[in-house]
Length: 515
Ligand code: XMP
Image (cartoon, helix red, strand yellow):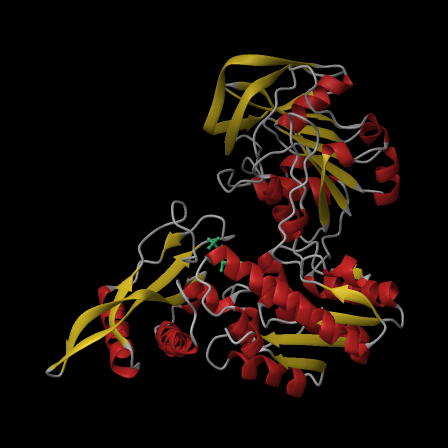
């Protein structure tokens, strides 16, 4: 496989995407975790050095471990990666007076397999590229030649065709470099000799083999929420180890309409899995009685969830492993440049603290995948489209969509209204255009008139956002017709709501959830 060494660029993940899209499996590792021993264990067939925010000229700026350059494998350095390669192999880098940012055109100065199917038939055309750099290479290291130039970048692409080391000043991984993916493919396929036969089907087989090798004949417990990640983990493990797997589905009493039945019937009846369905609604709701602070709600729910999970898992007896749907973005370690590496791992996917508390080893078969790759794996495993395409649903469930005190009555109103809202979205073919959509029941009553009667009922807010990772989001621009029709249906069909509003806040400054 291919190794991407990360120097902290915002777009390093895009390199991984492009490489995998061309059928080559790769992993991203921060520069300060790559040394001779790691390289020996990983045994990369080719290496890409990413861009990064530092300046090679500054003392103490990041470098690739020297062992990288003596492996005898092809290397491509991008932007900062090119600059550090030059600095490390005997060239020179200068700080520019002004940087070069945005669109530029390069022309090929030499023929190389790196430019296959680029620059027109005779290699005499131009290619549009995306530059974003302050520093630039001032002197090439011995053995390198200029392969392409732009008016502002005499070393736009350089290469040592004997050692198969290449460097680009621009970013081939971004969409603003239209033939960048082709160039990366020329590097991986043409120069490094990858066949490009990696696919989700191959990944599935490897993941199944890896799970079998890890757990042997041991028992595995898996928390199943019905969300995409845990559903894919459950189906994958079931295929790998069958009855050695037990899933625990905890109904917190704050699920959406029909949700528990849907999940339990699919996994228990359709897949015939060992599934423990814990109906813990009363336990949760009693503990939440009178609580309105959002963080207290989360703490109570999280703690109770763990208690119940632990209790149920113990009943299975002798499970040595806990399976989790941790994804790639959760484990990518961010690289800090002002005090050594810092590790950022999101915790909300993890069943907090459970592995230590229960002395279990983790099984995390999705650690190397992005969200849309998890969906592709789900399809590969034949998981029902309803589950593969699902919007995210937070662990605390409807509790954080019920600002103020949570009561069974308010939850019932919210559940009905939310179901109508989602039904409308599906009927209008909008579900897959939206990242997440839900209703929120507000802790205020307003006056209305229905028939000749004065009403004094709840206000319901509708939320729908587009996003790629949930970190930033924009509200979804529904048509007025859609909003009007949906409000009418909710008010007519749900007792207890007499007013509907639509939330048009982006994130930031808002968050996706209201609590
Ligand atoms: P916010 O509201 O922070 O949400 O913009 C971003 C994404 O995270 C989900 N979310 C949660 N998921 N436990 C979870 O498992 C939580 O406490 C939680 N809070 C928010 C939210 O639904 C959205 O997808």
